Amino acid sequence: MVDEQEAVVRSLFDAPSTGDLDGVTASFAPDARYHIWAWHEPLVGRAAIRTEFERLLSIFTGYRVPAP
Image 1 (tube, helix red, strand yellow):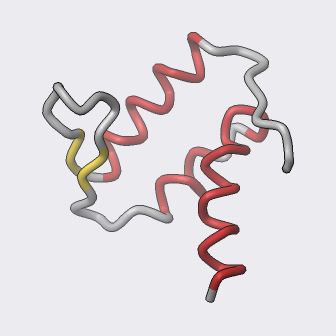
Image 2: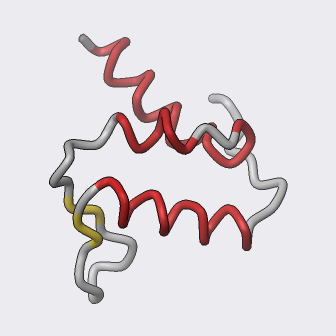
């Protein structure tokens, strides 16, 4: 179970370099709530989450999270 959970988190970190937003958003429940900032309303649903990831990827080109 831990390996599966770690793989999901790593896919989120790898998204900027792989561009696999389909894979990333598929890991969220259809009605998931995702907070970017605690003081903002959460994004709700895969489509809204994907749109935010697309926006972030357009800003942070070349972003990578180093492996531990």
